[in-house]
Length: 259
Image (cartoon, rainbow, N blue to C red; front, top):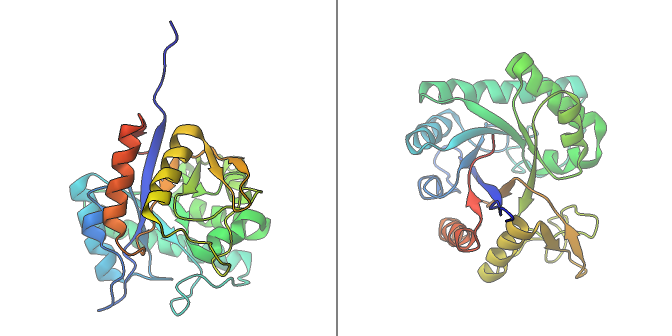
């Protein structure tokens, strides 16, 4: 008799994306759905009070806390690519992780993983220098034990993480368009972000249950992911996240944080 093992998927969301009186993400609602919280660390969004509050809410709900590190780009929301020297970028990544760790520990939790944001995330797909700098920053902040790193499957970031002895966690995006090469369609191009809830839900199930995604040209691309991102800045993000989680359960997918 063949034993069927249900596929596993972690649900993560970008949270704490506000600054001062400005707020963007519905942190409390999303934290009732996701299993991992990518918390903005102040370079693209987030401030000390927001970081503290999100860490407290995540700890109360048993949601794992991750450091969402980025280029120093508040004005551009971290979505502008920057040529930051490797040593400087490593220091800035470590700085962001360390700042969030203070609030995570105060809440009775800890930073459990690292995920680059925006332009830094996309840059580390193909830029070995910047990918290596992110990993160096993780090592600087976390020591020999390191921390798991989320990134695009096949990216140089995950390759660098694996080479450094860190856990490399492949990630997929339910609301983003993909190229035939398995990379994300740049946000500036038409159709880069999916807005139809039905399409987002269907894509999430296909990614988790079948390990595949339909690219922008209609081709099927293999995409083995252990974590699925639900963008917190999407209008109606919390409701959409609940629909995604419900559909995953109905399809026999276990929603569980990665080890």
